[in-house]
Image 1 (cartoon, rainbow, N blue to C red):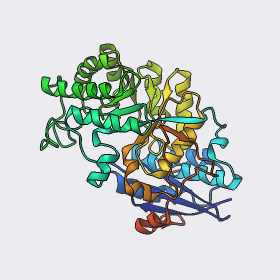
Image 2: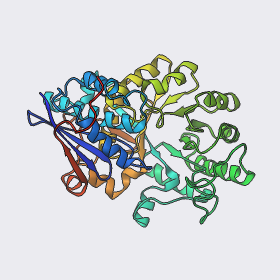
Image 3: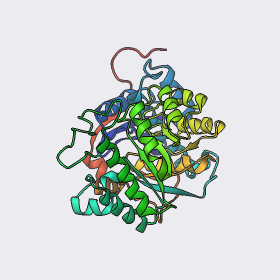
Image 4: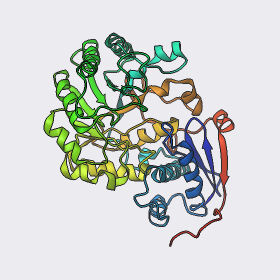
Length: 406
């Protein structure tokens, strides 16, 4: 079997369709659907796609190593590079499963988890009621709103949630001034009313959910190590499941600092790429949970290796999922196989009409648990409507330009 062409799509997500000479096609996703790298990932998929034309999609290790070693930027090139590697790798696994008539989890070793517990993610943006009333996600400000959204989540059968209590501004109209991506992030210490508001939001969630609700606190790296330590210490009474991305992961020593100054279990991973990006976190054992984003860190091949490394250090795994339908499906197959699986991220963006319409199938949890897809391959494809709507570039041979490094 040989790869004959790759269709690159820029739509709801950055997605590719890898075609073969035997008429079997596979789908992969490059991640980076949020933030400001979509066009870069779209272009990188085209660049790397041209390098795998003629290769056998069954040889996922060879293809991954080829893109890693023979492209100069494949080694330590950053998230745009590894996201394109991820898209190609995932699509090849999808092809293998379809060709053999087996779901990908069977090719990875089979299930160690029969069902996958999920948590409702990013509740600072609301849930179904917000989507229905607002036409999309919004922002929650007052602690009472956090109380109400947790009650809503529990009606859907979830017993675990994630909230970023500092992402939403102190009051309406302050977007981008306090915590937002265009604003000034806290350095050194939080103002008391900001600290108290963050704590009050989590306290409201705990009150609504009772003692059995698991609460994950996310910070999106908005705080420095000192400030994250202060907030973590203040949140200790609320039994936090883990404290995600309390600061930027580029300097792993800062996670050691936070761990020394508060007792919350720490997690990170969506902005760490490949085994090498996780290495120091394993060696210093500063994390309780690792969160590799399959669509950003190199695909199924690389994510499985990261998960296996984490098991050596007794670390749980929650694959980071904030993408399109392909991202969700691929994550489920990896999580089904690993013995150190912790919980699956069900992002509230999955509730939006745009996300649902982008996939051929509507994969979603029931009563807070996912079943693993049994369809051959990863069990998800782009919908015909999404492929028609999205911007498309087809790569069917080497691109003109400088010779590939060999």
